[in-house]
Image (cartoon, rainbow, N blue to C red; front, side, top):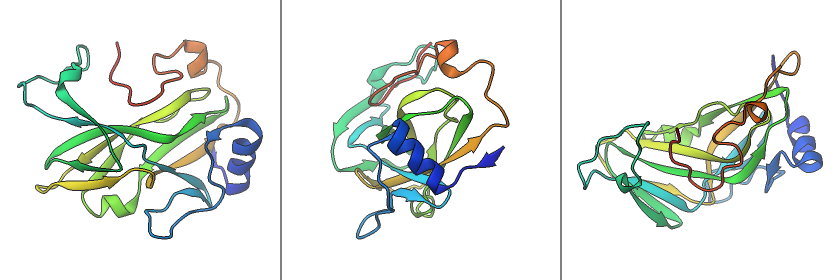
Length: 184
């Protein structure tokens, strides 16, 4: 399994729609960087947020998740409460090839501020906006910025295509748009 370079990512994005919209050069001027890098793609944060709140004294249960655990906001700057998290999604829509697995890592700019981005791997033939969980591990409120870089995706090519892809399984998060809450 090897990490795929910028020219492969560009070709897949422009010729096969793997990343839409696609930013061919890394943008940095006055923003947290986003766009194509040497061996990855830095995705942007969308402007839709679900901010975790415990105002109703709810219990977090992935088998019976309640939307009432969140306050929804559409904004360019989101404040994450101390020791809490938000859900958002990438501005980009991804379509992963059958012989590729994608790993996501948070941007160092946010990590150095105590903000952690968590995403499970993007499986072969999965597509959609990537739902992002951003945790504020600090005892202070923290800001995140929509339309700017939030995480980097690394594309790993398998030695051969998988037997059963995410699409073949009819995965429950296939084609998701916007912030997608846990599903059973």
